Length: 617
Ligand SMILES: Nc1nc2c(ncn2[C@@H]2O[C@H](COP(=O)(O)OP(=O)(O)OP(=O)(O)O)[C@@H](O)[C@H]2O)c(=O)[nH]1
Ligand SMILES: C[S@@+](CC[C@H](N)C(=O)[O-])C[C@H]1O[C@@H](n2cnc3c(N)ncnc32)[C@H](O)[C@@H]1O
Ligand code: SF4
Ligand code: SF4
Image (cartoon, rainbow, N blue to C red; front, top):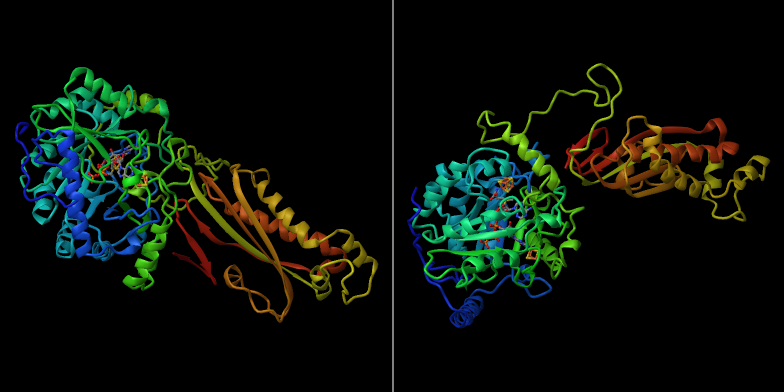
């Protein structure tokens, strides 16, 4: 191993960088004056090359750092980031192509971005990463200064020299433990020695401008190694960053498993009372320290206990082409869809500007982080989504230790889809409820629609707004009876909502779901009316008849879809219309086709029914 080799800087640092030669230890006053100097320089450069306003948010933060996720896949299964069985992957056609990545990167660079970090999933397993980096390198002439990657290093030892040759300048390598056995426990895979090999190759690569080691600290698991990691900085000119464990959808984050950076610092100071603050990069996530005489430095990324949102300069693009303005904000805007619909660069910038304007000042605190609707981090392209509860982690540790003879497997691929089968029938042909316990909670919605055809007399009745309205019919006993039932459509609407909530009681193998919203509309339609847009476009209508169109949209955050709830809502709504009107309409009524018109969320992503077909969007 090449432990003793220091890292030289190949060229001047980025204009955003305050770090001196990595061997130097700098005292505070010098740091402060240097910071001021750099600020002046940045102001000068900015005045020469005006920054695109679309990348400036409401708090005057300039976003000159873009993080692009290249893939949702990973060849490790770090327990704090990824469920053991992997995650539901977006269909391939939903992911940005290489050309689309470059198109967006170019637009951002021309607008002021100076640093691009490629992340994932594991970015090194993206086909074409070498080409992507080479094409990013061409953007230097437009102002791109740093091409960075965050990687677990498992496969990187093979590609690193080529990536560097093609333009890679910054590497953040993730390694949570120096113990191979613990590595296997934490990542659920083998490969510790491969990561160390990558580290050696990186240390020996003079043209790499920055090398950082990411260590996510979990209480009782790897926090005991903190001093060993600090010791690595004695001979190695490397920056080790201790990262606070963060919560994301499905990771069952637990405060008691998080070690605040201040506690780690105290522990290190006890061993090294002379430790000193080291210079940070501008907009850095880490607060850095070093020990006098040591070659490298170490720092703390305290996203949880001491956020750094005030200086945030980051935007992210997910592998499926959504722009996310903040790591902890669930809101996303699809650049992919807009780009694929033929949007010009100006159109795209306008959309980006809108998203950036919606950026919050900060994530308010760990209790406020939107872990319910935010996507798992592995899909954001940053810290991942621990899928297991902390106690399950420890249970898992013993499982792994018993699997020592398991075959080596460094790459995982999506399991091929099983042949179509009835999910509610088991292998013996018996009814069976699908166990969704391991699935992630995601935001889901479904819209169903259906029509009931009614005679003109019933149409007149439901469209009269009050008992006194001149309904053009004789006040027969039947009409009176129908009137006594109150506002037919209002009752049907309520019935649909209540029906939807009862779905799991009505349909034997349906899971009970905590619905977050049920919205039902009932629209009377006369033959001469034009067909209302959206949902009903997809529903063939007998244009010579009066009808009522019932549409129900149901939402939940859960492990399974809500189309059964939407279909139940429509069915019950239409049956209730029947019941309300049967006194006047009787056998002349007919319930037409009922179907799911739209779905969002879950494994199959978003889809919309078009006339007689289903189209993926
Ligand atoms: N709160 C917050 N934390 C972030 C953000 N980006 C990265 N992090 C944290 O930084 C850790 C390391 O991520 P990296 O991918 O190495 O990125 P980085 O440290 O931001 O990268 P550089 O500053 O460019 O070296 C992650 O695990 C997060 O804890 C962000 O935008 N917001
Ligand atoms: C999601 S990974 C993606 C890049 C690459 N696969 C890797 O591991 O370096 C980016 C960084 O996020 C960190 N991370 C993942 N889950 C985290 C969590 N729950 N809290 C804090 N950091 C996390 C990882 O350790 C890694 O350094
Ligand atoms: S942190 Fe997540 S994305 Fe990175 S190696 Fe681990 S499981 Fe993969
Ligand atoms: S939490 Fe959001 S605002 Fe704060 S630093 Fe991260 S991305 Fe920026």
